[in-house]
Image (cartoon, rainbow, N blue to C red; front, side, top):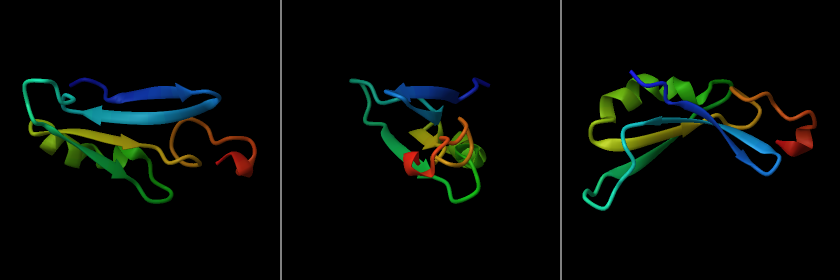
Length: 79
């Protein structure tokens, strides 16, 4: 199975992103589901759910800043 984990950079911010299933293309009407975890979990908490739906949906989860990966910002004001 493919590792769904990657780090996405936006300016000086980093976001840990997990993806299962293929994103929509011009030949299908596949929907994207976005899963948000609670504190203190990580986006990977959705793995079993996402793997089950990956044939029908593009499933995306991410680590809320301050938990999971990457490390939390040094300053709480940067959360």
